[in-house]
Length: 455
Image 1 (cartoon, rainbow, N blue to C red):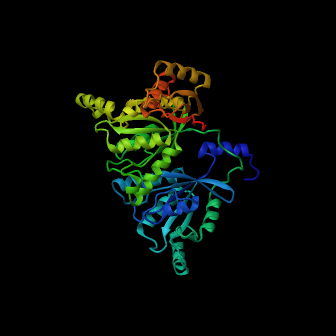
Image 2: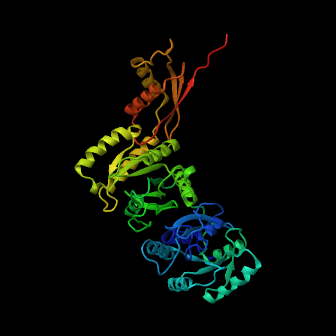
Image 3: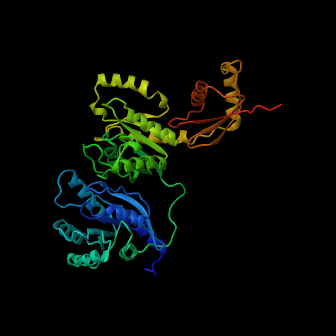
């Protein structure tokens, strides 16, 4: 490997699985895969709860060990005899193995070898991928002795680890690096990278169906049961000749402080996904009324200062009467986000999904719009002259000067002779949008009233 030209190695890596080699983490349900993934990446990212089936999609994380970078793909519990939703989760694990450079097979050492484990081993052997065997839940010397019974799986030496306490993880990681292909010591990446889009919405509105349609594959487990997605799922998608990073998220069902168990962590992940994104695509079920949950998500996006596109999904199921009522709901409930581009789509069939890219471009353009100080103050001077602030208690505050210190989101600082009414501030925002656009983005307005000089 050392004689290989790094440039050639990089090209080959890019053609196959990108610059970082990929490790798929598989095993039957509830053997501690997600806890072990958190141990490998050194932070709590994967949702963990002591019951099977919490991880449902294949989810990627960046990891580093001994100066080498690799990608860890967490998968749902792999039961070869699964049916229904469990069967699709198993299919995701199989896809993860097919895409990986090496596999970490996790077995519960306290349970020993099960029929399901042996069935998974047969599939792993057929894949031809290098396999590292992790005997998890080894918290003491007694369990460590039991772990060596896993030699009988025929996958070589089992590495006793405790995902919970970190015991034995160093030796396991060394073995993982040996199993993964070497990567050249080159810095990869471009300035900014692909645009980051979070797909958000309450459960069962079609977020995962939309991501699958965009990606052109069954990338995310889809089921009519609400709450199928728990972890945010990142997917690089080619759309309109460009690469975008889409983040599918768990539906927000409750306020974070009211959720419990894995729902609590899933809600946190959704908020984190919005913070990581540049644009949030809010997916609404066009058949249903705009709900309090939808309004809460809109507020979360606005508070995070992210651009937003609203996608009304399942449009093929909307009749004329429903469209009439929907328009009234939009006027009443979405009045605070009139600036967000709206598209009507059917993710299941792909109808009008191509309208998403122009809407995203508009939202990003608005999010990054900057107004020159001269043009801004000329506009505000004219506005104040034509529509002065109402007199309040014998005083009439004025906008003396303004500047836009930042974009993403556009932020304006108004230097005033006194505190402006909230209604007048909203009026200024509305006129800013009419004059300069700002499609698809919240606007932040900060006031700095002039301090009165003490005599």
